Image 1 (tube, rainbow, N blue to C red):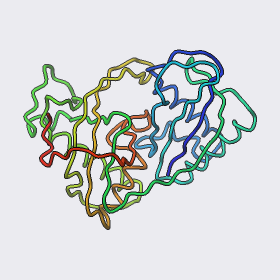
Image 2 (cartoon, one colour; image 1 turned 90 degrees about the horizontal axis):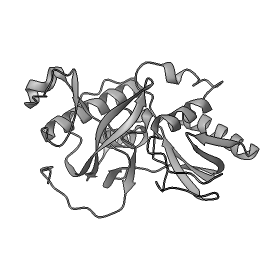
Image 3 (spheres, rainbow, N blue to C red; image 1 turned 180 degrees about the vertical axis):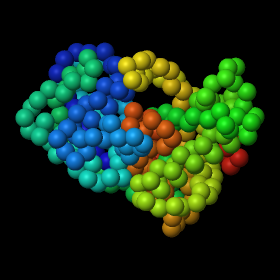
Image 4 (spheres, rainbow, N blue to C red; image 1 turned 90 degrees about the vertical axis):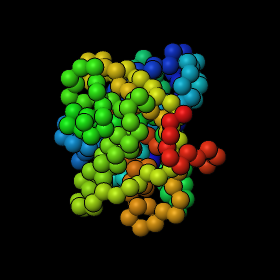
Length: 262
């Protein structure tokens, strides 16, 4: 389940490429006074993700921008919606960094995963490989790091295995289940690697991620439910910072069955 939020710019402004933590802060602010008020300080997964503010270009007063926020938690989406509608009715300014808007409209969307579908990542998927798994994947980092961000120079199976493990952990935690992991991602297309600068705990850090298309055929049962969960909660790590936001794509793609990076 997700919300499409339409904004209108209150002034001329350059697009802020480091919007991640600022939009995150705005979203957490919407939860104050609700039963989700402590979500920011809660350890573990937050079970929501959000898109970039699009289109990602400089704006002039009156320009329309949009973003999406998604979660498998309907109660959380309801709180976001109620607060955004209140802000819209009051005509209050929304400040995301140096960008200032009013909320024009809020729409509820319920995209569903079908038996066959393509998931396209709208924001980079972040996967960290822990030190304990270096030897498993033949990873030899230049320094003794506790983890490395997956990048295309590292083995492809390291990305898929860590991605699947992360998704099963989130799924089991959210639903209170103990589903054993099994292969989920069978056909995939690597698009590009990216590096984002984000502020975490008051410090600017580099976060490496990658953009993908994942192709699924004949989804049914538990697997279909897990992929629907991935669409709602986001893929990979740092979802509540805006990473791993995913959309259903209707576009045609070239399928690489072995997942070979070209």
